[in-house]
Length: 389
Image 1 (cartoon, rainbow, N blue to C red):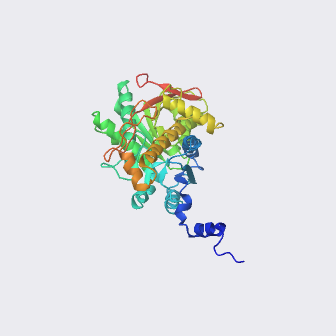
Image 2: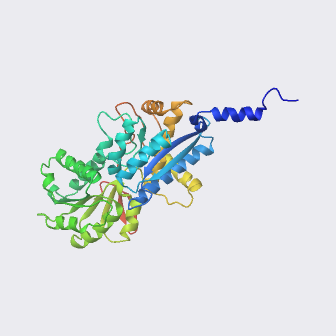
Image 3: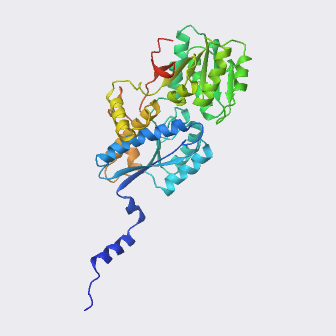
């Protein structure tokens, strides 16, 4: 006797065949990052990913968000802008990510920001303090965690001048691209605001991104009219370390100041214990801090990234993902790209265990404005006070 109705099994298969592709992803929320997993800035990209994955693993182990697990798609751009551009398009169109998060670098951001705006996809927590990510009023689809390079440089320049070094005794060594330009211009702005009107006349050496060709930049500083007592470096850890080693022999008492982007742990390894006065401004608190958010980070790394070192970059990645996921939670079960931005802009008093309350709105797209200082001591960077230079 023939069955008058199809078996339930075949009805189920037929319904799955008719299901829209998007429904297959309903049980997970996909985030993405294009970052430096290879190349000369790979420490930064890998560390950001480790921190983000540690918090994502925490959330997934607790049941996810609205019953959905989180997945982070990582694409390598080697700190190369054209690769970042291609990866951004893949994340948005091929992987259909809810948000791009934790990208590394300013030159890569030059390529990814226009795509975020064009495709109305949030670019969140980029590892850069550049002004291009901080327009006024802000771009709707660009939201940041960290303090800006202007804020880092304002602290650095004031500390230099407050400790007896005159403005004309400052020199610059910068990466020859948008990152180097942003840091340099931020320092010149800080000098101008403190009354020094001739910042553009100070010695300024440069080097090409993704190279160790620092000698020509050092020569430019040597040829300057004044022997520097402070050199502000806007670069990545490998060329910066090479420059410091060479410059220290010429200027044995000079102080070297670096932006947080350099990655203090990677710089410490590259310096290899040399005797030099090296400082790094930081946008997260010291790793030995007793703040609850730092304790949470240490616990998560121990549990979900047990073989990874603790460092300021992965701490930033951990906090970046923590804020973003709070926005996803706040956006509700039917979260989409627009609802996520709306949800983040409605955050008023978010406590992630740092020493400041986080808030966003349509005019405020930066979570933190704090800047700390660390100094090089033997083989590592330790917490320092801005008053101790």
